Length: 231
Image 1 (tube, one colour):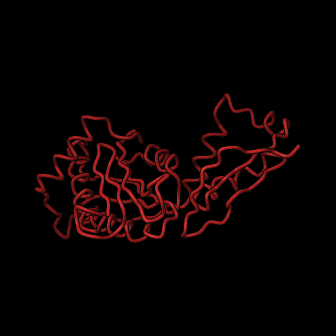
Image 2: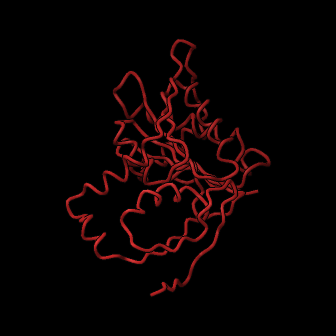
């Protein structure tokens, strides 16, 4: 088992002994420290955090442990569900949240997962803030909320649409020019949540070669060194 703690969050292989693998107890500790950190950074009486995840088998378990912990710490949670890292980042600012957590281990194999921590600007934590959270984890001095101050849970399945509309609305993104160029595009979706994004771009491209296009709970990991597009 492997557990890696860093300024960007926590990642590791699922299961094993707490502190040696990514277990529910490790998730609770980091989520509690993050809740304390976000509360310290905000002047609001109610704290709001966005969470989203990729399609890993362990994603639902991590999501539920994370959500329950944040609610127990008095944090309101908006769950954007299956999503991508950039979309969760956009959701933080779009929903005017105080922070965000992405449940994904990126390029690591399917038995890994992670919590990636964002600030209120939808950015990864800097060195100073990341070290502060690590100190809070080690101190373990968390005070959970009484029942009348528990966080509130909501879901929002519109954030992928919101993200794409924000991209297409950028002044330097010329949608008609892209469409008229009739680009030929190869997309490797690694059988995960990027599938949800590229479905929205079908109207832009004349020809697409899909690779690993099934959204599944078992993510296919493969690095494509060379892609040869048909002419």
